[in-house]
Image (cartoon, rainbow, N blue to C red; front, side):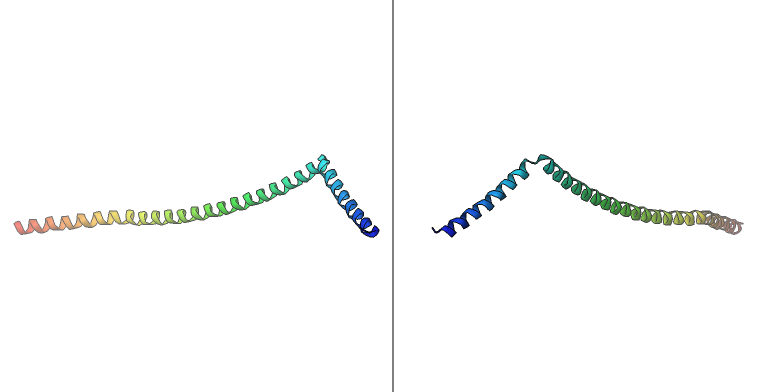
Amino acid sequence: MTQPEIQQEIEQTRERLGQTVEELVAKTDLKARARDKAADLQVQARDKAADLQARARDKAADLQARARDQATELSARVRQSQIVQRRWPLAVAAGGLVIAASVAFWRRRTR
């Protein structure tokens, strides 16, 4: 090997050694690692909270729609029941009138 090649190899070795030392320092810096981990956890927590809020809003909207549908159906049933209740006395009166007319007609024929 020539002198310039040896110098170049020494420089490359120094750069790799410097990077290795920086990586080791970063690994031993517990405060910085803890801060990074805390920041990551905060981001995850925010994302999870946003996801849960969106799911809760969707569920609430779904429940409101179902409640409206059930209220509409119940209202229709109540109206139908009210119509039947109004017609019931009329049906009884008509039935009574038919029976009274039949009895009157039967009595006239038997006389």
